[in-house]
Length: 187
Length: 441
Image 1 (spheres, chains in turn orange, brown):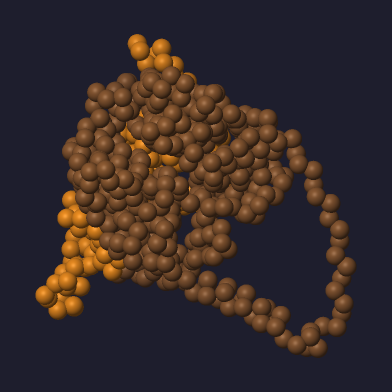
Image 2: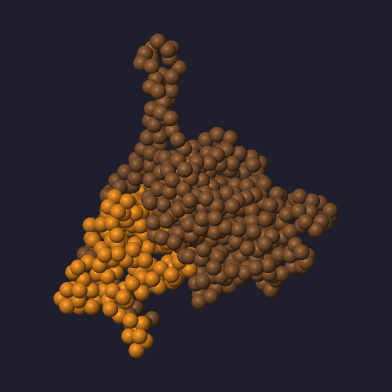
């Protein structure tokens, strides 16, 4: 094994082309059906709106479909498609940021009201929505997907040190916005 | 996990339980989207062809006989007075401000221009090569001395790849890697780590990369430094100029830095317990004749982490005065990157985490003091994404400020000048990347 992937890629099978394509599509469809619900939930936590999440997941599966034959290790598929979703979201966010040049620091005015109307959990979610995209991705992957720091680092393509610092900053921001202090945490 | 983190976890779970209805994508929809993505990718290539044609047509007009052109005499050219060099560009200034820089001579090393629709390598000779890569986003590159380019790219899903092009810039081989790549000072060999812990080496004049050695461990491996011109040479007594030394770092399965190794020839030597046992090795350099007192040998890297995040680094080597080996200096404010080819200077970054750098400096290895340092002390100041030694004293770097990228030169005394135009962009994706002289990204 020399770690090489040829530029042309793809394996050479003995079955007719149509038969291979049908088997490939069946294989892909089965995977997509099994993975779609949880991927959509993650995408929703990243985007905050259902239409955007569905679009993101559709884009991710389309890119996965294009690369399906090149992926040798099927056990790594979950991580692979998750990486597409997270990174595609970041690039979408970057494009939107370039268009609108908006700041993500502003806390929605409704956040405090939500605390009374829908409880602490709802309020906390609104604060998560205000985090910068990378910090939000780290929070979602850590506290919803239950990934380790190393897995988050691999997903986002950053070092584990950056994962730690991003998580730390995100938690500090959330605590501050939620009016919590470290002292309260220690109690 | 603290109570607050438990609440956060519950909040996220509650949100998706109540807010995400089940939907079902079908294969036809996904295939349709996939076709659109493919068309978009191909459309980029077609767009470049159209742009080339658009440039060629006016060029042909210039060759037409004079009487076919307008008889209107050329307008008198306005006389420009060069703008005065702002203080922040001068040596001695410590700010990282790239506004209104004076224009300097063209770079003496190549660089990757990502400001157009296709990546273009621009060589000091004036040659330009459009790269036709498997993956559209390069993050770093170097050139082998046989004319091929070795480019670090990324799949949509995040996997790092090493693409090796032919001399015309078209990818011929693609290799998976876990991290960046290193090149030897003569650009004869490039090394990287495969995702299976193998040290891969590509040699000029040899088509395929070969496995040099396999490094123990079950985590990620990365190559931090490569020296020597023929890793696969058979050692000969008294032979000089052959063989190679590759520094390799490892990570544990949890993602923490693990033991380092030195691959000498095809032998893997653990660095544990040696002076080279850095937590993360950055660069090693030797210069001069080993038989003479002018000989110097330095190694730099992160020695330890303080509070899990803040690194403290050391430079170890032979003291030029006493001729004894030891720690030459240490810093917890900077992270070493690369020595200059003559081993007289060391490029340092600040210890800030993530994104482009807001601090850059150069240490004089003779005095062991900062020769110059520049820092973004104000959010409106600039950032540096990549830097490479252009010669023994100057650095070529990609700089970002105010929504614009440009290629700049830090002279030996820290003065700054620009060597490219400015292009709009975001801070994440550099529009220019200097050719790696040591490692990329």
